[in-house]
Image 1 (cartoon, rainbow, N blue to C red):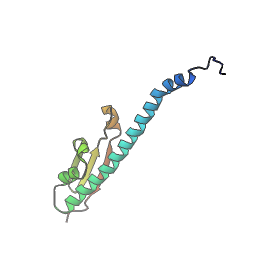
Image 2 (cartoon, helix red, strand yellow):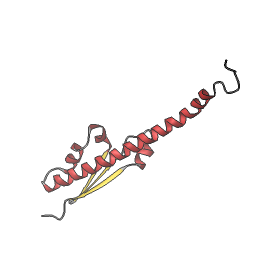
Image 3 (tube, rainbow, N blue to C red):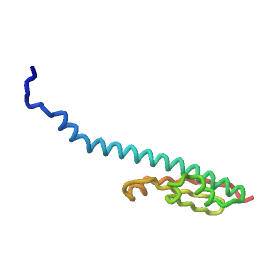
Image 4 (cartoon, rainbow, N blue to C red):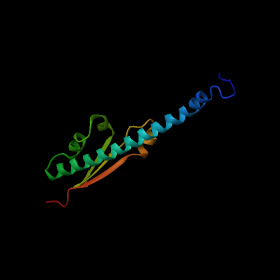
Length: 113
């Protein structure tokens, strides 16, 4: 026989209290993963732009073609001579957070031939 006491429903109360914390932790991990993906994609785009410079192609188009569709609107490519800088903002629920976690990678095609 079970005796009812003051502990009835305690687990439910604790679960409800921890649910917002768990949601925040999951969102933070997802944001860090998105920032890591943006870093890798920016690196690939910078490399593709550098190769395009070496081959006499369009580095901006090469950088944009090197990233998936969702990130094309979030990429900025700057070309200064034979140097390329690629910046990529990860998706974020708050724009300021996306700007804070922005990935920047450079590629240099070397001296002019």
